[in-house]
Length: 290
Image (tube, rainbow, N blue to C red):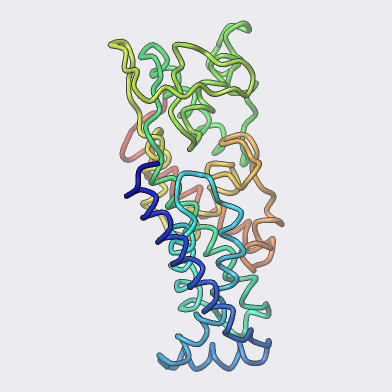
């Protein structure tokens, strides 16, 4: 590491240490204090807003630790989490019947995940696979409307009439193109869960797709309500939690409800409403599916 880079790294580390010391000096809130502050915030009190934010900065750090080594410096992850915290402070309902930390956790994680997806590098896939990926994603969307759940890989493969020997390759390519982690060359197809970093290669027969916009679905999610979009991301595994595979492991309605501080039935209603909106947008903007 060069001297200037080392100096920058030391300065950032010192800034982080100072920040952590400062927020550790702020007392945590009781449930009663949270409710009182939340009511004051609803009435427009800026000091109450500031107090609620500062008292929960340690919560952001605790959550941010789970997202280290994913492409952003730790302090940047914390800052993104703080943006989510501020949104939670503005939207928290003191009469909802849950602690603020439970409610804020969802907003903090959402803000961090969005920043990580926006910061990822490009993913390179052979051009002959681009059409297949598009057909796979489109059919997955169509089946989710029809079935009311995330379709299995086998159901999608059968719908596309893919040969048995090609299904594994296509499935892995779709997963890799959707994964927000590094740059992968699919001309040298990895085995199982391997990824091959290839930051420089750009063969003439490759098409470059941005990982955050690899499907039309991600674009359409921006057209609906923020909460509705997040329910679909979690439900269908489009924006995975740690340990989940993109597009493979979705969350249950109950788990999503607990994360967002709402009931399972309320989550189901949001999902149903969001799917209807998404279907309408999809058909209006893109016509018939593949």
